[in-house]
Length: 109
Image (cartoon, rainbow, N blue to C red; front, top):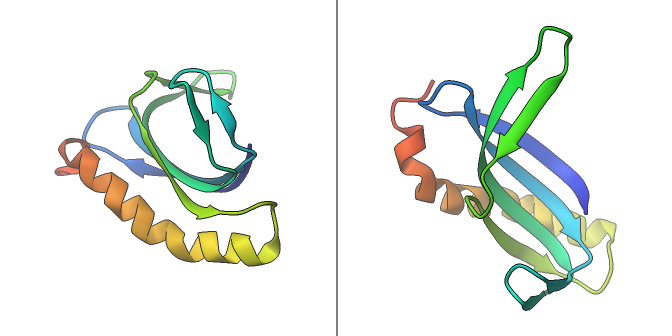
């Protein structure tokens, strides 16, 4: 998995953020869902807890199966053209998935 874009959105819970990312995946068998996943560019949104320790390290934790992902561009190989298409589709897919987390976004700064 190669990350192309990653951002953290504030929520209404302390130390909880929505991690939004665009990444390229080689696809193949997903051993948690027993499904074959397409090779291509994916957008995912997951709630995570982030905490910066006294010694400067930021710890990130999440609950399994709490996020969503969507393949926005299916392709046979990674390339600049497909990456540009994925970047163009990123915002729309992110907004679609953020609607599923409206309870965390109400009143967030």
